[in-house]
Length: 151
Image: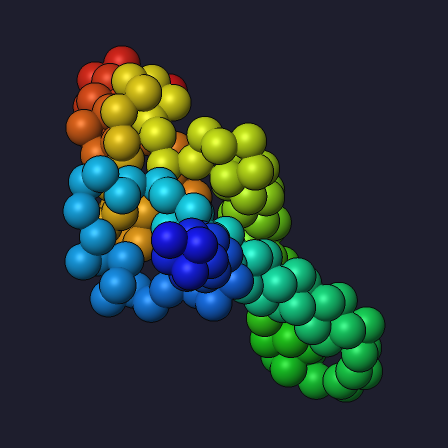
């Protein structure tokens, strides 16, 4: 019996080795937001956070590399590319904030649950959008209200 307990405790420590997406999808409803799933999503969110921060650093370095170009058309092209890059980074900055909030929700045990209804958001939706904080139905209702009544 002690051997079985040892195996169980070893299995409960398994989230250190992150499950695969296939294993995640095979899990039943009773396993929703268990330790393994939370570890999977936390790892995914942390990787996304790392990628976003890396992109921000690359943009900073890229913008510091000022190239003096005598041709006004070339200069305008470079300025337009910089503007586009800054708009992209601004979107990523907003996403980074959501990623960090989602990591905080995992740490507090609230990740994966709709903030309006308290119902499960669903593994498939979280795989598609790991920062989702509303169930699909609640998100559709919110978008319909915005469409009907404006922001």
